[in-house]
Length: 250
Image 1 (cartoon, rainbow, N blue to C red):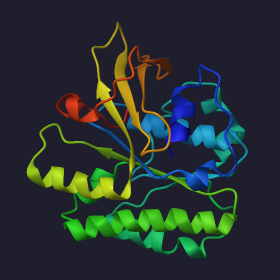
Image 2 (image 1 turned 135 degrees about the horizontal axis):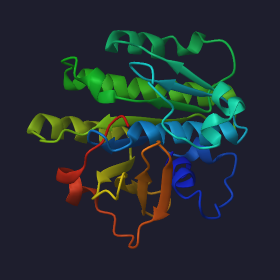
Image 3 (image 1 turned 30 degrees about the horizontal axis):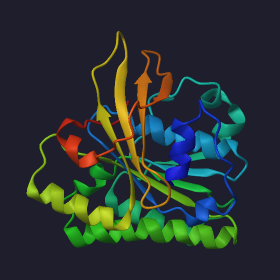
Image 4 (image 1 turned 180 degrees about the vertical axis):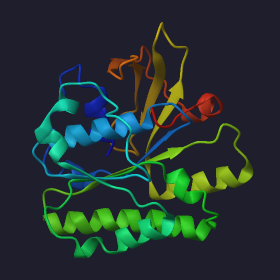
């Protein structure tokens, strides 16, 4: 799903044409950052992007309802796009697993994009590593099932947001390493020095071998509007900034 985020973050520039089979070929993506780094806002922007390109609805899973729309843009206020985003709120890991396991029974239009916000909240329920691996595998299996149902030449993408701890220990590192096996593409969000009334971050996209790395400067205005500009240098190295990364729900 790297190309979906690349279109969201590169929307100020001419985008390369995307073939219909792109979603089918793209690997699932893990969106990483600490508290307050705009993961929810980028997930919502990806939902709007997909809902607006005519591919189909979006299934947005999160533990609790959003308090407000993260992006104050024309797209975020477009009722036709918003109608295509279906929110569901599994309150526990057990209910999330049940929802994913029953996806093959779901009626209605097949999602073109599956989003999960706040994976760390489900992992915090004292999950063993094998249980975390099972949840990751089930997310991939659900997206693959939707892709199979929608038919060849299209597909269902998968983006999962995970809050990185401010002080990482060996258990956190092992769990992240495990998840990265399932999500070869990653986007790291790093908080930077803010401007007046702004919250600013650097978005670093590692597309998992499909396409070049890329970086952007992202600023959130007080009213929630998101502005994006290319980062001056394309020297993306997420591991060098893990200690300074902060992310979460805007």
